[in-house]
Length: 293
Image 1 (cartoon, rainbow, N blue to C red):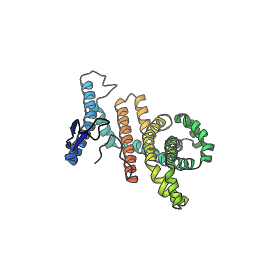
Image 2: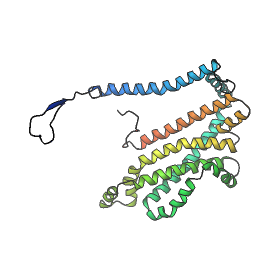
Image 3: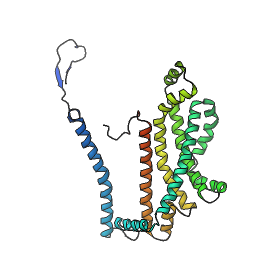
């Protein structure tokens, strides 16, 4: 590709110099370049955690850190394996996962419906937004005693706390997404005589859903954080209870097992929501920072 550059005011004269641009590897061999890029990203994603774990193991073996307080990764892995084989780990994992899924479902549905309503109807937004803004800034763990009074001991307070946390993330992202829809989209729907159902199905839903799913993905990670903190306070099982109880008994290897399980659960849940978003919104651009084919 060759482009001629001319100084301003001399467009009709001969060019002072020629700028020659040759296609790069990404243009000549896009598939090969993409595969190399993906391989490099995958290698970095695996190498960095492995390097940190290796340094942790080395520090424990060389006594740079107190292995009684910070057990080596090999010790944590062995303890986790033993607990899994004995069946002691899975009840806690399932208890946390069950609460997260139930609370996430309730919070997502209610947040999406109210966000859609408030984004579409100005009077509803004017009536409810100040109240919800005030409740949003309240730390959700501060609501745990309220939920304990409402639902008593058991699953109810844990699920309600997760639902309340997820609700606000989904509500804000949904309302903002609906308000950000260009007015021309709605005008086009009205010109074609779209009913309210058709307006929602063909205009509001596809235009707002990508931003809504971003909020839902953020809420997925926060839901795991909240349930672990809640289980440390008012639960007799779950990963949060395992972490807190193990620390009280000075079983730091079991405590680290619980922390690792929480990390894996959080990543898995967040990625599951991201993949669901890609499936539901194939027209939306991919996440920034990830290569595109």
